[in-house]
Amino acid sequence: MLPDFEMIRHQFPGGHDITIIPVADVHLGSPECMEQEFIKFVQTVKETPNVYLVLGGDLIDNGTRSSVSNPFRATMPPNQQKIEMAEILKPASDRILCLIPGNHEARSGKDADDDPVYDIAAKLNLEHLYRENIAFVHIQLGVDKYKSGGRTSSDKRPAYTLVVTHGSGAGVLTGGAVNKAERFGYVIDGMDALILGHTHKPFTTQPGKILIDPQNHTVRVKPFKVISMTSWLNYGGYAARKMLSPTSHCLHTLTLRGNKKEMVITM
Image (cartoon, rainbow, N blue to C red; front, side, top):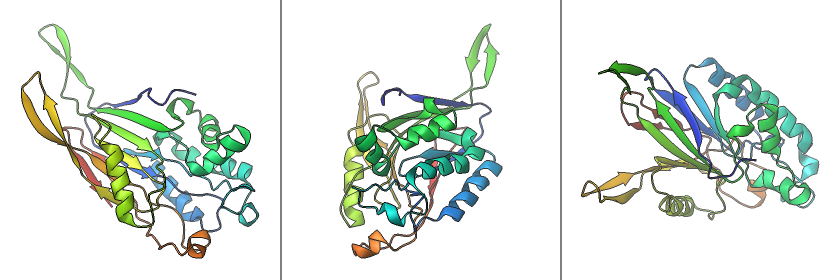
């Protein structure tokens, strides 16, 4: 397994825009999983040019005897869950930018030294895009080259750095999740977006950091995006039993401009 801090790098020539859809908390195997909707979504990604995925954990429900999830209520056993998830993702495997596990997959690490998301990545020949805890993803657009004065130069090439982690508990209310996500974002310099899941609360914020550039004698505010991924669960089961508030299913799209440094997020 590659270390977390080894950067994942992608280059997209041509200067066109790309759209990234962050995905987490599918919980395949849960009775509440929106399985058919997820299958159709992956097929749509495959059929749509310049659309890519980051996979942020809890792809499968992975219930065990010691977990909150009841394994006897699962629609399929955990081993079948990871096999089925790999088959669902296979048509769009060339659109995946990174994969990380969530707390549901971590159950297998504690019980049996296994990570189902790594197994899924291996099945798709994407081990090089897997990270165990956090992924740093560098994306460069517009890498066409041209000749100038006998030397090879490059066109203006906007570059973006995304940080993807599954996240951890942040309380019942959305405000707690926002505070925890933004607080973690403040400790990472140089990123353009922090993408995380776990809370099942889809939201986007844009905090800023004061950036001092001593070489150019400037001070400016550098914004960064915080994107909390939606879940793929219908309301019921554990959430209803624990009197948790329902959350809506709302996908984010993150568009990276290829001709200038600009990110556009929609929900």
